[in-house]
Amino acid sequence: MCGGVARWLRVLGVDATYTPGIEDGALVEHALAEGRVVLSSDGKLFERRVFTTGELRGLRLPVGLKLLEQLLFVVRALGLPVGFPRCTLCNGELRAVARAEVGDVVPARSLVWATEFYRCRLCGHVFWEGTHWRRIRAVRERIGSGTAHGEDGLTARDAFGENPS
Ligand SMILES: [Zn+2]
Image (cartoon, rainbow, N blue to C red):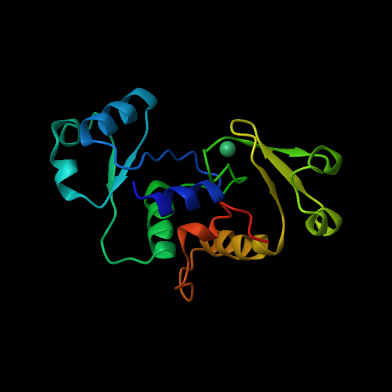
């Protein structure tokens, strides 16, 4: 699956794994082992027996779609609900943490005005609802209401990977 879509699916609370440059065989094994749906724009991949027999579920992403349109396509095709965001870096679950717990990680300015802080249970990365969060909230609402129009400049980086607030 493409990395940008994976990151944004995590923003939407979807459990999504992504391994850059993974071989098709390894991808299929991973998906089978974890009971996952494979997303790819590579039609050849879905000619494999494991897909044609229905043993593994795959969803072919149409080419030429913008990122938000791709997201909407996936969410609709799989009937995914928009849930609480997961870590965009590693797909781990986020838990709310107190301001005092993240004082050494969050810049002083953000520490003052941000009210919600989250730490990834897996990689420990800290997220907070900074200015960047407004964009994320807007995208989550758009996906939730099923409209993909007007968001042309969405990138994988927007999925608050580096907390650029
Ligand atoms: Zn993480």
